Length: 252
Image (cartoon, rainbow, N blue to C red; front, side):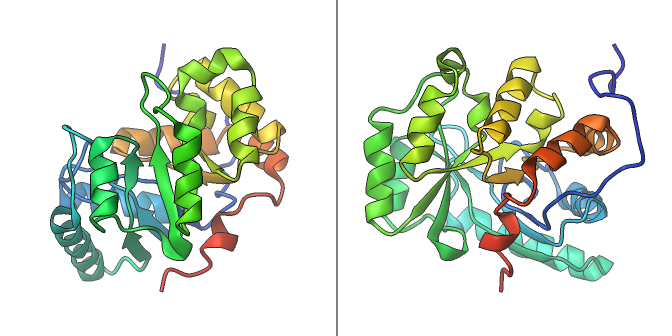
């Protein structure tokens, strides 16, 4: 099977229906995303070609694997900003993080080491093995403290798939926003993830889209997706409901 056989018939590429990416792994050398500054700059240049003008980088904060802190993340952000400026790549770039709901994140959050997005939006991630213990209560507690949780790529949590959209509806109705991965819509993770992402769009639960881009291969997959009939269909179904640009009109 060729690399692009997962996509529908190609058309002239479309641009993304949003200008701000709220989920990507482009900071160099801090997680499983971009390994170096050169790759990071190349990824940003590709993203600009899709119509992205503002980027909130979201490196992983995950127990045992990526135990990042401001001391590891802020220098990487400044290194990338400097490299982009030197190459004349104009883009608004800040950082937050993608926060796995685990003991390390809870400790770092209580210590004040977690940087939220503007407006106190907080990108949180479930385990891929099972739902975090007392998830509903924890999300509620975040809201009570003045934070606005955004659940990263809910379509990728397989343990929700056999529940239809019931569990998704419960979480969404309680006030947690959902961020769908562009790569899920592209079919990059598999048919099940794509199907669930489409169901969330149809059910009015796709509040934001993020690229979740890690590598240049991901960029190639997104290029192919944007030239597919699937992209046009998905963007038409979304209509004007996406909140990316409304929530983050500026990152200044």
